[in-house]
Image (cartoon, rainbow, N blue to C red; front, side, top):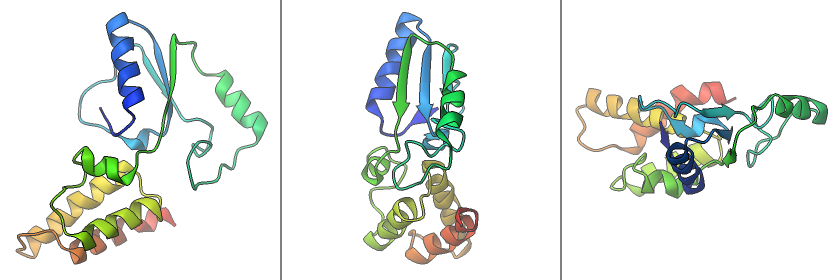
Length: 160
């Protein structure tokens, strides 16, 4: 697993692993990239509410208060509980999810998809993978705005 941004969660995971403590991470798992590394044995993960949007900035939660309370009452009792927050767009660049050397137009398109269309970290990783395939099919050497725009349109259908 690769947690993007969220230094506090990375630190809590280190503490849990070192001290053999159970940990509950509350947040949206789509902000974690699955890289084949397993979660620690005693790590638990849960959405903050049934719809998953309770703590999401710019997204509205459709859950009733009693639904949230019932959802949270099912959380396991762990020694450490921590919230996974949505990383900033700059954290995606810092952690090399988005290449630093891409052109500004490409960067703005990705940032718009992330901030305005509410793409997740996984969505952005998928868009980039598809865009690189489009670039290769076009015999391109550099990732261009048209490659990103086409890849975004293939992903955006699910965001409506």
